[in-house]
Amino acid sequence: MSEASPEGRFVVAAPPHIRARGSCTSIMLWVVGALAPAAVWSLVSMGTPAAITYASCIGGALGAEAVWNAVARRTQTLADGSALVTGLLLAMSMPPRAPWWMSIAGAVVAIWLGKMVFGGLGWNLFNPALVGRAFVVLSWSGILSKLPTKGWYQTIDVAGNGSLDAISGATRLAIAAADRAAKGGYGFDLAAQYQPLLFRNLQGSLGEVSAALLIAGGLVLIARGIIDWRIPVGYVGTMAALAAAFGSDPLFHVLAGGVMLGAFFMATDYVSSPMTRHGRLVYGIGCGAFNAIGRFFGAMPEATTFAILFMNGMAPLLDRIFAPRTFGWVRRDG
Image (cartoon, rainbow, N blue to C red; front, side, top):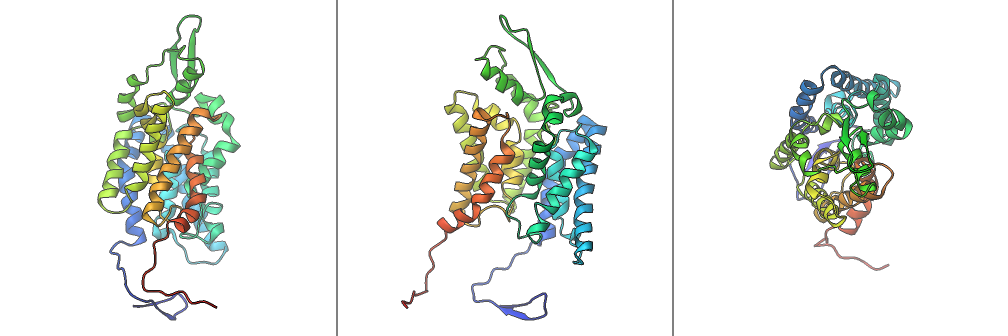
């Protein structure tokens, strides 16, 4: 098999040869299509704040990639769709009332530091959208957590029991964490949260508005062969098992926060996840394990971002450990 290289030379590869029908652009468009129902529903449910966040993140990502390519005198790569997906995923990981400048800053960091500095699409070690999300969380955590009215669309007030009067939190995860710290003193019913988490959650990031729509989109990608089922199954299964082991409701912790968005759409990124089948399963298990540990024992109620970023760094090692055995080759001494 031979193909033309960018320099005009021909590269001859040994068989077997694999032909893929899907291009990078088509794959990215499938991902956008799978995310579209949840994204549209968040726009319908949250209105103008959501629209501003989507416009800022997507526009920032597209603009950042165009500027980098122009300054570096490289061919523009916006048509491959990766910057669009990065901006969309970043927006869905953001609270809808985050200031527009914060969303743009996160998008620029996602593209420049998360992708282009490594050499562009195909060379990045970490998921670019999560790099941008981590930057925002670490830089402006006060706006995102201590000032919920400037970050989240709605907050929840829960009456307490006994000597506890009330608790107010930005998200259901924040209230669940406070309730665990109070040893159940607030009487926060996790099972009662299933329906809003599945269908219309207004107390979280844009991508948390409907776990049901994210699951549906993820299943479409699995059915199309675009993502490997091993990563989301390992992720979600481990998250549920550890939540139960830690004495909490596993279904709540699977549906709440960024688990579904992370398991189906972020951890499955081709470039930053393992290439081997066994490596992908272990990688998904690792994402779920670190997410659960961070959620129950960390300083923040949500740990999806840092769990996936940590396992992104482990992906090359997992590929090395689970590299398939090569047949037909003989090792020579000397």
